[in-house]
Image 1: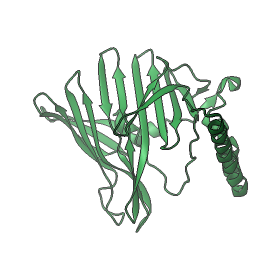
Image 2: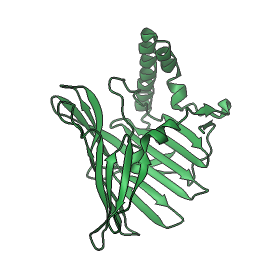
Image 3: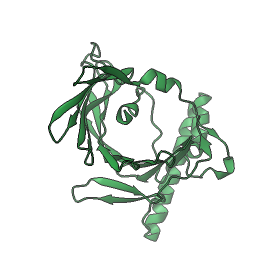
Length: 285
């Protein structure tokens, strides 16, 4: 369910805020503390560390997109490792991400597509999920479908079947007794989401996304597009100046919250420096 719940419906036509090196987002929800950091710029590598000390759960993600142009569309393959650790049970679940599919013609749209594999060495459980996009012309009943199965890898027996639409409801069917239940309801989950609020402004890091992009966000809210362009230009120019300064001094930038590594094959991985993510001055209910 974790994998499915992170694939929210993207919005076509909205320009992203290009993350700058060292930019962070630190937020708390109850006992869950989440920290993201932009740990590399070329390629754009993002790291995530989330912990819940009460439930003894930890998530560590490292991801970076690689765009592939297909004429009438762009498919951003999201590379990197994702790990969910259930520390009370001694279980670690590893998974990949679906790809972001941006259709330009004939009908513009954005979707998640591709295969996701989830595995746990300790339990021998594995899941195979497939995100299916709509047809080439943007019509048909296959929009935002997810299908899959949960397998006992030691026997290759299918234990459960997954079916549904990841932007509405997803069901799990027990192959042993035929019982079926809803395991994810996107509308219910998204309707409960609230905008984070600041409980201690002085404790907010200067690298926080909300601070770095505050002028741009305000200009967009005011629909002042000239100020928005200027605000974005200022952020990007500051990043270029910092890069030129590091190069002139021969200094290599080092992430503050993660250690990063790259294999000979070019794959990136990230490990958090702290065992537990601290409470954030930015909270959401």
